[in-house]
View (spheres, rainbow, N blue to C red):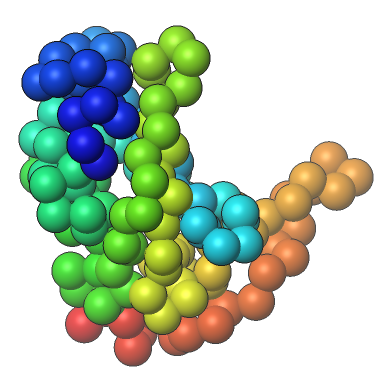
Length: 135
């Protein structure tokens, strides 16, 4: 992303509205199909590294550290485009998802449960055994 595309010079990151934990919601969407793959969090360093490397980097709240998507599973996300929503409090990453699996459950998307008759139903199959993804 060039600075012109980012909304004006080095101050592009100042347009992001960080929450009280200094994080911003990051939604990964398949650049080809348009399917929403996952939602994660980014801190300033994660967003800057994502812009610099064109590989999705998130902030893991449970591990309290940066997390390069696919660092363990190999299912990296190559970032094709980054967008900021109108309020500045969410970023959208249009990605190419390696391996066709974004979710740690081995599914294409983390959004695999659908509300039906007031119950969550799993509607997407496991594509890869999570045991093979994570050692």
